[in-house]
Amino acid sequence: MQTQNYKNHRKFYAPHHFVYLPLLILLGIFGIYNYFSDEKHQLFWALFSLVIFLLFFLAIMVRQHYALGLQDRMVMLEFRQRYFELFQKRSDEVVNKLNFGQISALRFAYDDEFKVLLEKALHENISGDALKKQIKNWKSDHARV
Image (cartoon, rainbow, N blue to C red):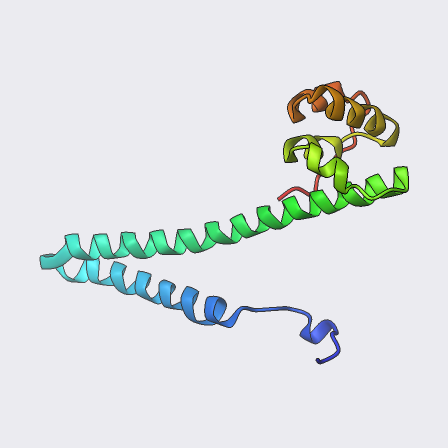
């Protein structure tokens, strides 16, 4: 594998970036052009352009979905790391007792409150939203997607 550096660190998914999206853009332009130039079949070209736009929109939304899925995995990993740092134990048993909303909420609490709120989440099974409302010293997260 080639050593990574500034010149080669970007990653493209060729079928998506160099085939699918350019093809959709060209088809969109083609459909709009024909809509204005072919008066007999304007309805067809309008529907054609709409379908191409929806496919383009779907491609963008799928990218957002992937980003959110990855972000959820990162939140889970951050929880596991933080739990290990605070308790010097693996978090497998604790993670299995909590839902993602609770785990996600706990990241907004600093360490002293984290321990208390974690106990409440485990023993009282309070929701993630209720956990967030109990945080007195809020730890901001401005890196959300």
